[in-house]
Amino acid sequence: MQPRHYPASDAIAFSPQRIFAMVLRYWYLLRSSWPRLFELIYWPAVQMLMWGFLQLYVSENAGFFAKAGGTFIGAVLLWDILFRGQLGFSISFLEEMWARNMGNLMMSPLRPGEFICALMIMSIVRLAIGMVPVTILAIGFFDFNLYSLGFALAVFFMNLILTSWAVGILVSGIVLRNGMGAESMAWTIMFLMLPLTCVYYPVSILPAWLQPVAWMLPPTYVFEGMRALLIDHVFRADLMIWAFILNAAYFVAAVIAFLALLRSARAAGSLMQTGE
Amino acid sequence: MPPADTAISLDRAVKIYKGGTAVSGISFDIAAGSVTGLLGGNGAGKTTTIAMIMGLVTPTSGSVTVLGAQMPRQRHRVLHRLNFESPYVDMPMRLTVRQNLTVFGKLYGVSDISRRILDLAAQFDLNAFLERPTGKLSAGQKTRVSLAKALLNHPEVLLLDEPTASLDPDTADWVRAELMKYRHERGATILLASHNMAEVERLCDRVIMMKRGQIVDDAPPGQLLARYGRENLEEVFLDIARGRGRAQDPVSEIAS
Image (cartoon, rainbow over all chains, first blue to last red; front, side, top):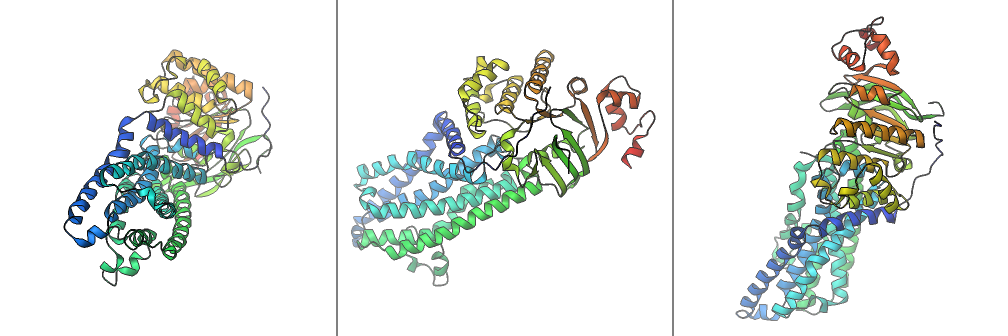
């Protein structure tokens, strides 16, 4: 028997193949489980229908709401991009914890950046499966066509999805470091943002001392921008630029936090356990 | 500096968790192409030692080097050349065996994955359940799938934690033969943690005995038997676990 020689090997660079491997893993999982697919669609549909009917009712009884046609449904759909984007990211991550597969991944050549990329792609895939049918329902039920927002919708979407990824990355790092005891954060953290990002009302409604807090959150700019577009028919590029600046800062901060939490998990030995 | 043909080197590696010390300054070098057994009772520090070697846990102090890379800092230089099997991690249960092996094959950069899966399926007798969800397999079948995954990338260093624990004696014997075949064909370095002393005697060139985070003995199986004046490794293991000394050389002296 001849012992093998070990040539010096440089680090393998960022690998699209490994990102594809992870996307494939989640796709296999989604494909094998109809409850997972159903879950992606039913709740956004219920939300949209409930708020849509409520808006229909009040618009028939109040002049302002008649004028502000579609703001509630638009807000619901954009909120769902934010919420479902984060959930899609976090659930794909949690699937690894539930499956006790994190050890396999962490001891494989998969790099943290590749893992994050795969989770971002899956958040878009899950979002598309859930949201596209619901937006079509909105056209059928309420004659509200989200796609008619055109370029503005693309900008809204990019800003919301960036926020959802930043939150998803941070939550994943916390779960990696602290175990499944922190899992509930993945389901609830976005609801902390719900009142502050002013999804259904303008920022001016908030108490003066709370308004600066709201303006620190990128989705606030998106929801204000959406109201400006639907009510005043004005695209507020200034709001979108601010949202991008904040999103870029939060995204970088979330990645740095994730890497620090991963380092800390290695030091604490928490990658060896996936329980509480 | 470890010798040139060293695959794994630990130098005064210490791991302290919040709850206490798991590994207390152990040092050893494992030669490339050798099979080493890591033995010890529960809480001896075997799993933490393997986790440090795989880069899953950062040593509190000291160093761990695998194929020339400091772990975990330089792990991405070598992780594609390692692999492992452990009962403490599972593969995604809803994915079929073929899907799981495909995903891990891609993660490890295996070329011609379909061919490799067919080879491993033949080697580990997986063909009958390649299309079955991994979660629906028996414990023995899952172990065989895990071993197939561990060999997917032709690893140069293979870490095995209880590789035959849930296998019947016949299958376990066959798996041991496959592992030896792999070692001889590829010149792979194997580090094996096991409670099956007969397995360790059969497979290993060298045995490292651990107790309470320290190495209490380190020698080829034959030498250990002679040293403790015992017939088999199980008796040696019991001597060490219960604090009984060597025939000529008390354990207490080694530990101190």
